[in-house]
Length: 205
Figure 1 (tube, helix red, strand yellow):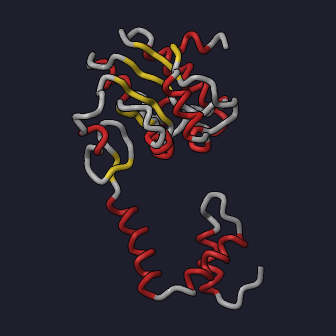
Figure 2 (cartoon, rainbow, N blue to C red):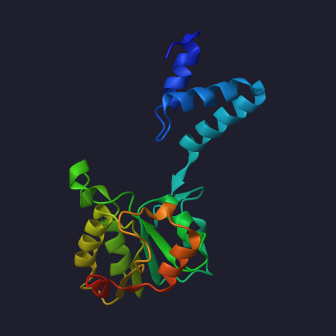
Figure 3 (cartoon, one colour):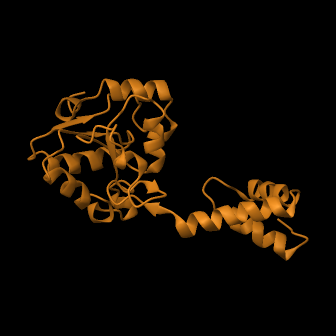
């Protein structure tokens, strides 16, 4: 791709680093910004810098937050005895959009994937065990993507959690194997949460 400006080329190269954004899409986005008022572009830039510099992660569940403890973890209206275990913030949003869950979350920050060099120590697993060991948790349920990495992570976590006195469940398999949670429609995901099953039962399916 030939550019008439080095500034344009550099901006396109930066946008192209974003996941799912190819050079043509990056060029379209940059040209769109060039067509906006300088104030609007500055506002966009300021929002990104402010996000990166000031964003926090909840000290309890590790979800992205504006405060040290997120609104969900600090809410007295939530059932703090049920923890939904998810991969990342996108999955918290997906579950919340179903209106089928009133517990709290634990964000792992990824999935176990030996092929990608991601092991248990790279995820927020020790803090999950610490939360459960306090004794006030009655159920944890896995809302992880129906992929090989998701199943590997669930299998590992089940081994770590099975000696605690709590119910361990997983979302019902209304979600096809290979499906990532954030792309599942809200109705299907909601039904899968509402009809979640004990993890041990899911192994025979």
